[in-house]
Length: 628
Image (cartoon, rainbow, N blue to C red; front, side):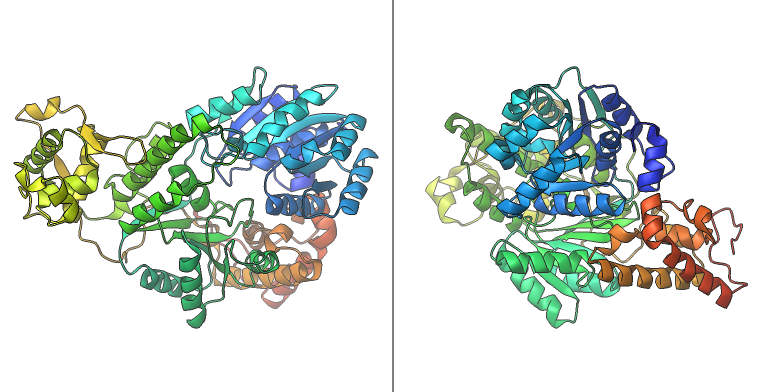
């Protein structure tokens, strides 16, 4: 196609969009100017467009380094559907398939090649790289290069040597959805980015509704939720394979179209189950966190965590697989105190192969701190969205009025006296014990461990025996947030005194916000408007016909339905009801290649509907002006 088209024209012709999203254009322009780039953008913000558009406009080949076979396959399918020649090189291909792909790439067949980091060391790939013009190397999931990130992969360090081995240094671009300030700086430093253009578009996913439920009967909650949302696609994450298997069995016996995914299944079964989910044959999947990296399914309406994840980075990434199409979606975390013990058990058995011995203890401390942050999220009574944004270093304002905590009815309880008793207990124990021991002392519990440390001799033993443990856990969590206490970050964290000076002022109060736990029944206030909200009953009827056509095409082409067209694109067809080629190209998400393949069939379906319902009104926008 050459460089005759400008960025907007490339976006429209190949991807079917009329304008860029927040941050995309500045990233693309920086790359086209030859600048290294680092972008931190939330899931669903359109990171791939940021390197795919310039890849089409730069003279040579763009290499996209990704650890995720499923993402590579998904992206390459999608690019080829859009009329862009792309390929991937990873362990899912045989040696002969890899040789053929590299041979075609050397002849200029592909503009974009996805490659696993392990392949960068192979002599065949190095020989290929020396024969072609590599204009850009893009590092996807760039947080994997930092051992301070939540998902460090030693294979990512191979990227540095590979780039250094090239006769001419290409533009480097790096993308991630989850990076604290420390990890962001680490990425730039390790990759040796030169005067990089750094873009952080923000971590707020406005279409996601966050909710934490502190309940025991988790399976009952999930069954009830799915029964209320039978047509929705969703992911349910569990910490253990055992939980995946039992929950999958329960849902299956209840008639839910469900599949499952964990490392205990053989590779063929995992592949089949993943495809059943992606192709909407089984719209619900129960999985461990081994599932989902690189899954680009756009119509996931809910993500439920059966257990608390090990870090906010993990939670943000996993919950962020909901609502990639920008439509309102729900992220629910089901929390119980046992989740903390499960995660501590799993972290103690973490694999540290490839990590320098002197770094292991420091990483353990950071893992412990991340777990504390995650527990804080589960116990906070404040705005959940603000908690997430604050963790990632983003300034927060008023509560969002669009999360579970903002929609709870709280009562305020003065716990100043009890807070001082907690301080006295931590002082008396000289900061030697963890949360459970401190709670046991305050409650006057009869445990062997407490007898062993002669807890009954402490002045604070049993001083709060009239309180319940859940209440005191909430109080201590609040005191940690307020800075009166802190937990050490080592493997066996202990409670220590923080800044207690404000408590010496008689006017200082420690107020705990409490609520009665119950199943949420009310609808979220100020929820983001769904695209389908503009459709009338006739519009819904047309939408379902277009969905059925999309599914038929997807099966013919062996493609996931969302790669043919997203729900958002189908809804825009219902609103605009195009009648010809020009009209169809005005639909959001319909590019030239997609029109050539599928456009006429959708025009015929829309035309048949209009012929059958000539007076039908299919949409009424917010301004009230109806469209036929």
